Length: 75
Image: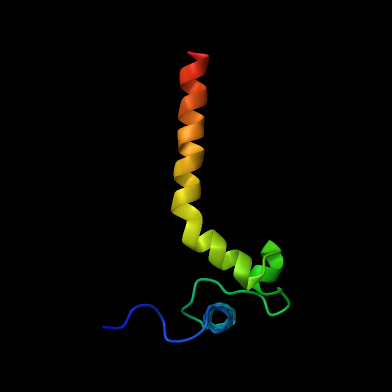
């Protein structure tokens, strides 16, 4: 059974970026041609993005726990 996409993260992001730049009459919007790629605009490398994407839930849970702890101690 296949798990995930069969090409690199960089290739996938380039494909998504390329697709977003296509202008079609029935398409609501597009990424302007002079706009830098998304990771460049975010100031992230592919490795940093992969870490953010794969550890998002863990980081969110830790932040949520800290927030709840601060609320409890303030009460």
